[in-house]
Length: 112
Image: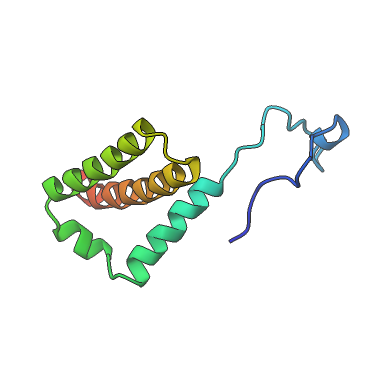
């Protein structure tokens, strides 16, 4: 996947804040998307490698989803409590984010 981050050491200059149309982009500060891309990659894997399709997700009881979300969040809490490395916390947070995306997709059909 492509990254939307600027090159290392890049700082926007006054001249780089102008777009081709002459507009000023300073109000559009850089937003890191590496975590979102990692969550989407895991979600893609859930669907295509493990068969967690929208139909299968919707068939699963909401209480089961809530328990899985709680367990994933609890694991992050315990890791933070015991000062585990940031990369481990990030991995768990990314997995939790992908789980939450799947849960939100499941609920989307129920909301409409």
